[in-house]
Image 1 (cartoon, rainbow, N blue to C red):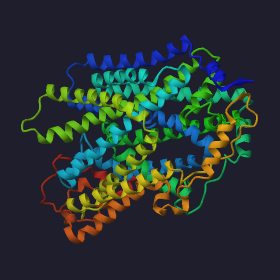
Image 2 (cartoon, rainbow, N blue to C red; image 1 turned 90 degrees about the horizontal axis):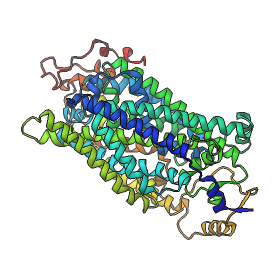
Image 3 (cartoon, rainbow, N blue to C red; image 1 turned 90 degrees about the vertical axis):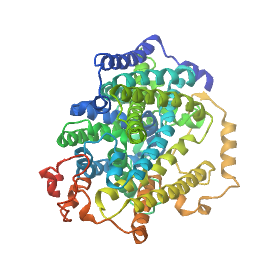
Length: 591
């Protein structure tokens, strides 16, 4: 019987056709960057940031999908379904709900304001402090998120080739920085189109070949059914249950709306389209594309279980990290077909590149609009803005490569990054929501609400992640076994680790404060709720705005009819004419 190292040695067969497929994707991205960078030398700020606001619906929709589905999702979702079943996939209901909420309440306001950075809205609606607060929260979140985005697919590449993580990450970052800094949003969007197709093709290829190998999709579904991985949604109202229908639907709507409607990374794409109708079409295509990709990832998770049902590679350590489970399966399934493993890995890196380029482009917009322009006395020249935007992209790219070294040496960094995301997302979403639907809330109340929201979410999420890391909070996986493995592994070490886990002297789940045990799907909702409640209470101290003196274009169309706006007030700073169709909420419900 072969040992585990022999099996890994056989599986790691990244041949020259694989390298050709892998390198071809990078060369195509570089080519797109060169085209948009050198064929259009005199690029204005609007062209660089928003493609001149003349982008096409389908490329933008593909770009949105590619930007949102990072390598973390592509590798993590199949492992989630493999370990815990399809319960998480019911978040698709939250995605559909997000499409409706965003299209009706958020998108009309941001699109008609004709802004570059969403945080400009906070200054117009409240004051400059809120704009700076939002921009700082966005910058912190992105700087922490970017190294993870590139590190996770580098782990996958390491699994299939044996090439070190720190060899591939600088190369990938340099390529991404090059085409993002050269071509701006147009280059990012068109490379995203290539990368979205590559992602979809990679997942479909794995699903088809893997299913054929074990006898078809019916075998996959049958084995999933017998192991309880196919299950109805959990209707429990206990907020500490990891995944229930309620946290996936309501918590999912809030999380996805925040990420899609408020975050600069995503809203910048919608603002590059010429009309609100086009933005809504892109939103519909985006939701459809995300649901298809999530379904494919989920099916691949069930397929991996059907293949390894009697020999779990996570337990035997054939896959040393959870994010290496899908790459391991790809090597096992596609390794015999020349170029196919390379095609899949290029799809994983496509997901990472699209997320990385989106964040870099958005960071350049936020730094220029929120950290530079408000503090310079003279208007910047076109040449100066171009240099600032490109230097930001290069600087953040270099920082990303450096932080990968930090990521590698911090075992809980993935959990900490998720915590950091929840710390900033919830309060920001609460502030934007108050701005759109609560015209009586002023800047002082919103600022206090945001600061308290960040403090509360820091306390809750970091303590929760400590409880998980210490083993006090554990989530029960679906049945996994290693009874029929065809290779030898260190069974004694597994028994020892299981025994140690059982007799840990640390706190049990019951000893953990209940708020730390709530599902992570409620985090954004909790942060937003705390922010809004504190802001409402603080109006007793700071007073309120006169709602009728707030510029109606800053409010969501559905609530404008409930206030009598002062016809003599100054026009809004963006000179936006209120479209006729926004006067009635009933006109907003059609996506």
